[in-house]
Image (tube, rainbow, N blue to C red; front, side, top):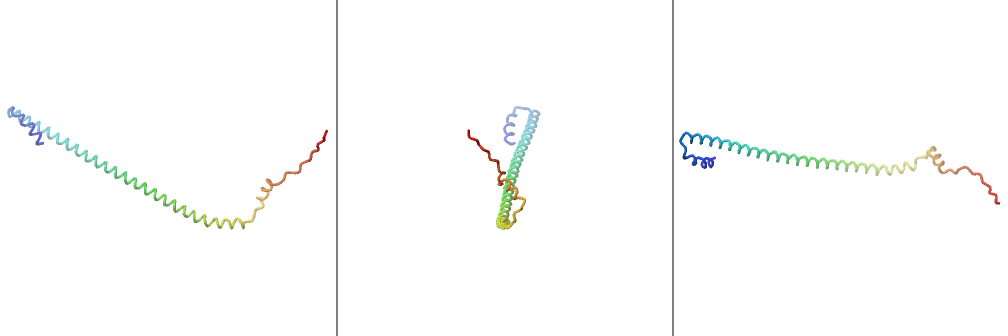
Length: 130
């Protein structure tokens, strides 16, 4: 502000008092508007920087949440697989005992016999040689 006043006021030396006062008032008003605009731009810049930092923080938080969910999901899957493995190891031994000791149902044997049964005897043809 001082630099602007020092650059303008010496050029007003040739004016009478009335005109010089008008020019000083207009210069003061212009300087005030320039200072206001400068402060406004500076505030906007600070605000934009704060918003950018906030967005980055949100993005980082979101990424951490995604990674935590992914790890949790993998841990749950691993626990489930472990339980399944324990259950299948126990049931394989039990299933083999049950299958060998289980009686064969009579309904299933006719179905097998249909596919393996021989077809009815065919009539033999006699060939006459000429």
